[in-house]
Image (cartoon, rainbow, N blue to C red; front, side, top):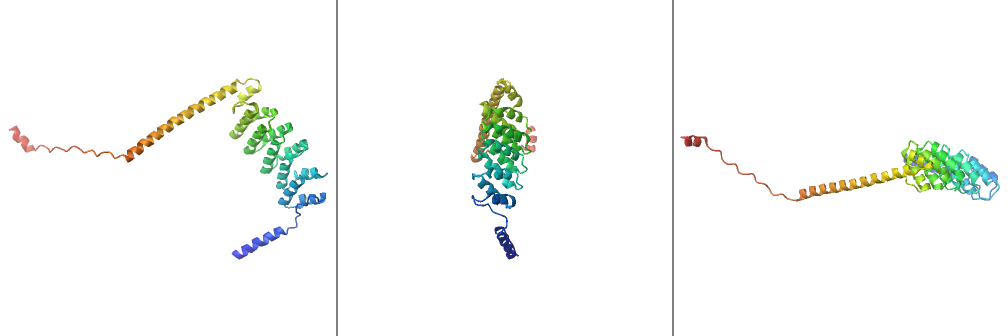
Length: 267
């Protein structure tokens, strides 16, 4: 049976190598060959074709990369989301990335968010804000919130403030950290304090930040004190364990007075 299993694996590998699906063409191949790969190739060939297309300077490069963003193969769409981050036609690329950030495939959405973060364009703010608000996965909402901070655009601040109302604590913390990075204010995950900030009042932010610092310092001192107490108790226990205590001898019991002696003495 083991021999048959090995033979089956070998035959499967040979079949994969002899597959009739078209492979990624040469860089100087005509448009028809690229289209054939994107339509009929396997996942690896489609992904490789998209990456190679991004390096070409032809009149059909953009059209085929755009088609890849709508390809049925998620790995072709993933490759499109990756290559679009360096596209010269930034506005067109951002429009496609906006489509991909709502893709059904988790990795495609993740790549679209990260590609939007490095475009350095104010037009990327709105797609990232949508991803941070609407993505069903809290990990990706938090990723989009961090991307809004790394984008370095002040236009992202109102969006980040609204993200402080997210029900996921990790998303709220990511939004607060991005707000701090964009405003040079302390990390304060408090919606009302940042609403006051938008209205021009920074006092609530400073008050909450100072209170956080005070509580952290108190907790630190308490932990140090308790730690010293625990270490002292452990030290005393070890000392008692390894220190021989002298045996305490019980006092000798005096013999009981004989009743007969009592009677004689009384006479």
